[in-house]
Length: 361
Image 1: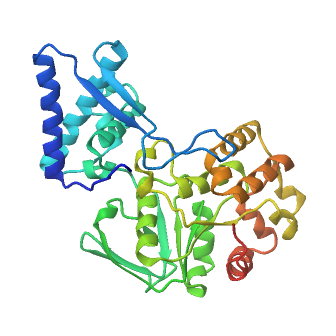
Image 2 (image 1 turned 90 degrees about the horizontal axis):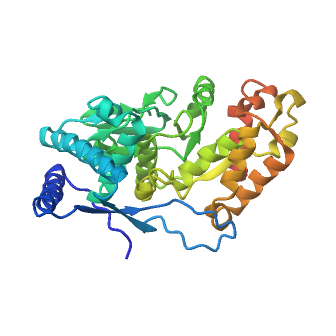
Image 3 (image 1 turned 120 degrees about the horizontal axis):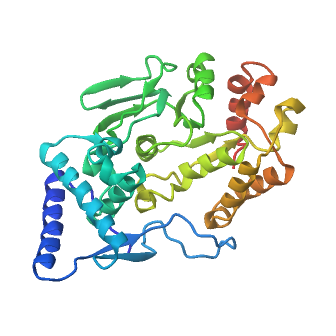
């Protein structure tokens, strides 16, 4: 049976926390070693045949924490410290960031990744998402276009000024009254491209909603997109640099990240279509040789790592073929290279013609 993911209110979560801590205390008082069984999830494996049985919603194994190893004693101690902070947040109905939590016990945590792991463990133990714990991310995402919504009583009317930029709300669970006149959603990798489209009045000329995560997307951006697609049922396209890191950002939108694999059902966008830039675009649009850059060693390592993910062959073989072609050619280029045609070529020719002709993968 697939793991049932419940959206608890804070009182239900507080009850679960009390039950968890009570069982740990009872074990210790009874002279028994507390045992925590934490499900382990994975977004992909390295079976390049595509014949694996990876599941997004089922755990691949259980990790068992006991007080018999020093490393596990420390991990349990840190998990309980974070759980105490989460309990206080829920009791007072306040919010904070992962970084805030780190600075409450910096000498104990020593590094941010320890806090991140503890929060993920708590989410898995309580079968909830991070935002249910009142732990929020700092939002980086931006949106513009033919969209109107409200968030915690505030109105966001992008339709009145479709090229005006708004920050994506951090607390996406408070977003409601979503209305749109758009024909599609366009995700762009970088803020510079987003601003290029805003300057060119792209959304005024094309009935679109444009979103950027400004690089690798944060959780609020991915949750917001998931909400928009689920509510509006619009086609969603993605435009990234023609390089291994751009393609990795694309697959992060499509499949989710390994770190948040336990919550990928609510963060991934299976409907996303890759609009570009493709390796073949350099010839199709006659990019100058100066726009083509040699792949670095790091680029090649990233490309090889992404190629080895099982979902590339199983679910998006055309994407895998394009990435392999990129690696074989040994050169990359940025979206902005299309400006070699003209400063408005991206917004007036490249994007509209690709969407109209259905040139996407």
